[in-house]
Image 1 (cartoon, rainbow, N blue to C red):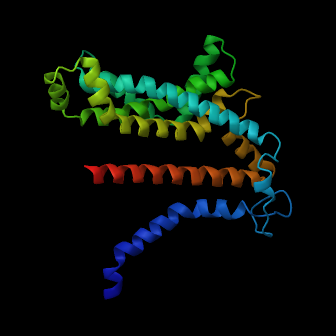
Image 2 (cartoon, one colour):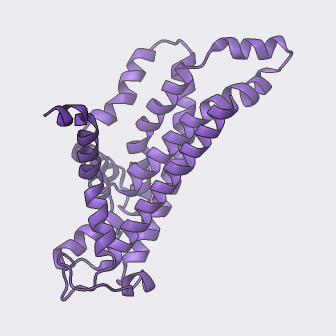
Image 3 (cartoon, rainbow, N blue to C red):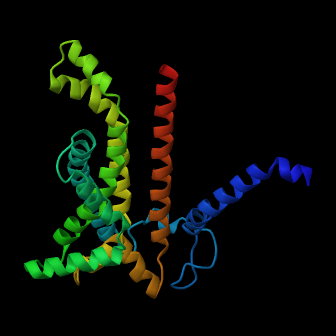
Length: 263
């Protein structure tokens, strides 16, 4: 019992990590499987066929390309708009600021099914045909509040004395912003952009409401494939995305460690 008490924190940490990473490990393992039949749920034998032909499932790479395009454009748009909104809410006092803060937070607390159906109703009332444009508009609205919240926290933590010091050294407001403020807020902007990309890329519910009959994103393709047999290539794409996320986190940690060491 004494050994268990001494190592309880480590054991709990390992169990939590196993709980988090186990689904990803299953995806990686089954990306090397050669299933016997349509369903890739039971291990048959090792194969590199899916890795050598990642677009072998008809329609999958087209859906993946659409998801990446929508996620990139939506994250860029929501990052630009969200950053401006975050500076306005974080640095200025104006009438209706409290109500605006509440309205910005509201989409984060609203169930996606409510947001998806509301946007569908709006698009139908406006006479817009569902497709890539409606998906893009929906994803920008969906991810915007996450960017605003992330960047606003960074803006609120800035010390105003830094900009005042730059002004004392005869820096113009634009020079003070680009040389002092923006570099300090950039990590928050980057985090908001990555969060928006991830949320947009894997969103299914809001997309499904606003995609129309013929537009298919990667999450919609995966859901449809699960009904009739999951191709191994889906596990290949999942593995690549997981390794990419691990690489981005690793690079961010390395940059942060280097900056802390330099400071």
